[in-house]
Length: 314
Image (cartoon, rainbow, N blue to C red):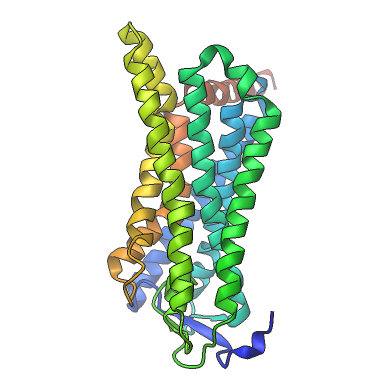
């Protein structure tokens, strides 16, 4: 990597607003979101680890998702919080490209991981008698590893092509972090190849898993409708309700952003969409899985009950 190809030594992140009072309010809001997200996702990982009844493929993937969300939100929010309180909202050239590759890596991995979780629900509902045989630990680890490797390859391809560009003009990024589409707009050289590859990767890594998830849920819904009792259908729907909500929230905003790659500037609505899936969903995911999941709530209540009994005995 030859950083001296670029005359730009740092970038300026324009952020969400220039109004000082709003920046302070946003700092407080995003700090709270960050703390809640970290605590919620760490709690999911902790509960999944300590409870033997949660040592299942579903919670293995959920632990991966929680760890991923911690990394995902941490790739954006700490620098954003610093800039909200800084006069000069800058990031070094190297720092910008590191943030960009980490963000693409984690975002691509999450798309693939949501697909793996959809397949887990498909096997659980459509082939319940063979679930333990199909979803054995070895397969789960291979699927999770494939998700992380796929996300990394997507990031490295786009990063390598971006490093071949020259940046010698404006250094103001119309965003709150170094997102690839926004950075490409500042290139002095022709970035048409980058935009084409970026769009292809977005179709492959974002839309590909999304379409497969839709197909998977088509089979799931078909199988559920064949269940004779309403109680059985309700129970089957509840096993995939949390995942369905997470997929809807994540892909609803991600598809909106990355299927509009032809625009020159990042509009306010695009920033909000990016803000939601990169910061909002990592905070909401733990609530979605804990509030709608009886197993997790039962384990949490058990931990609280044991702690209460211990305190009474003291």
